[in-house]
Image (cartoon, rainbow over all chains, first blue to last red; front, side, top):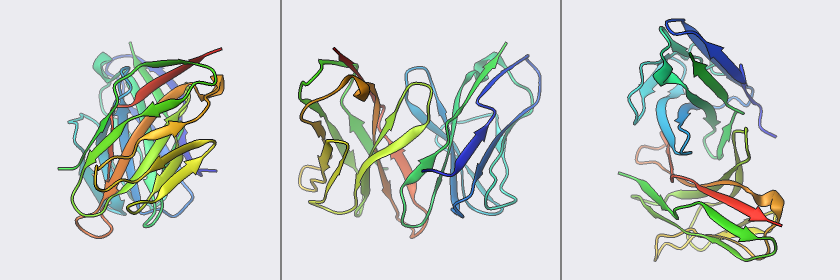
Length: 111
Length: 115
């Protein structure tokens, strides 16, 4: 059973608001990832981290930002939410010789 | 760069039918290969994996064999059930720099099983 948690599961928020999506893992994994999943199902990597104080932008350009101050925590922030940010956001972590483990996702709706 | 090409969906089958979902990949070196499954409203779960050529991953009646010569990792199940309805993702990790693996996913295949 995966020990990676995302909160909230669902979020409806107004345009212009600042939001933070939380992701925590208790497996001690160095690598963590954020994916955006569109309604067509495809996963797009938007951020990743290989350890504390390491963050990189992914393949899909995103207005969100991330931080990695602690190994177990990898929050994603949108400074000013817009309807185009409406999507499902999936967080994952991976150890050196393990597969990736995913959280249950946050479904974000910006109205 | 690395890439995964996955069979286009959606796929609709009757219960107890045979399932194949094709997956081919492009990667340098020796990638590890995975199939993940996503049930409605959930995140992705690992279904099976293979880490070297000719390895066969298996779980819950699903199987896939790592074929380096054809760069393929096709998912198969002999008799599907309604509970297998989900989205299936083929994926790989490769590391040009040790420890800095990137995950690469296919586009996903939606499978619906009808009773």
